[in-house]
Image (cartoon, rainbow, N blue to C red; front, side):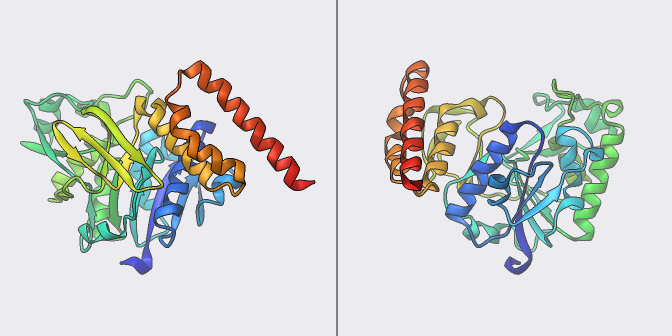
Amino acid sequence: MHNSFGILTTAWGKPRYLEMAKGLGRSLLVHQPDIPRAIITDSDDPELLALFNRRIQHRPQYGPNFAQKLHLDHYTPFEGTLYLDSDCLVVRPIAPLLDLFDGLPFTIPTRSRLTADDGDWDMDNARVLAHFNLSSIPKFNGGLMYFTRSATANAIFTTAREIYAKYEDIGFWMLPTGSPNDEPMYAVAMELHGISGVDDGNRTMLTPFGMRGSMQVNVLRGICSFNKGGQIVSPSIIHFPAGWQHDYRYRRERKRLELHMDPTLCSRLCESWLPAVASLAPAFRYRVGRLLRYFRLHASLQTHH
């Protein structure tokens, strides 16, 4: 599996998406540099592309936003693919987790199931389940997916695309951004093809949704621990979707990775000061950040003269 296995992510359009992908790329270089990395993008940013082994041209014809994820099978250069959303950060090696997916043609870590009586998942549950004659479907966060080049995976991707063609007619709802939600489409496709989600014991990827209290995270030291819904979890990949992309911990850890890969002494000092700086009030933190950038620039000029 490892000889033809790789990690795939996406980032196109606005610069902030490219910056998120840089964070993911850096975290993979720190913790799992031996696994090939590919990125679907429309960017030629050299800093971004240096973090990935393969650049795959983004194809707008595949649809807006999350609709693109329905075509990952067309994009991937790998026989076995671990897809990660670009707003993920890897906090420790993920190779030990790959045995979870060994022998599976398609899977997503799943911790619950959704029925017609449960809360909606960007769809009219009862209407959608009745349409497909299903009593329940797996529920998950699609920030991590594993699939292979196989007849089963191809069938799931094909079914998901067929669902998208009749998305709102079936009872699915568009997100406020005008994008479909790929997750319930994949859930229906998996159920129709008899594919269950894998139980990962909360070890692969988790989001902070449902977090109680604080989060302990340091991407360089392999630390990630928080209370999620009353249970202490310690995933190897932390996913910061939606509003969490603006959370200071996500931005701090991305900056920590950026500084870690800068060889200058000033950057090393900045890296050690980062947690304290990140906890300051935003206005003061902004001024301190400008001061640190000045010292870094000054150190760089001194180095080149």
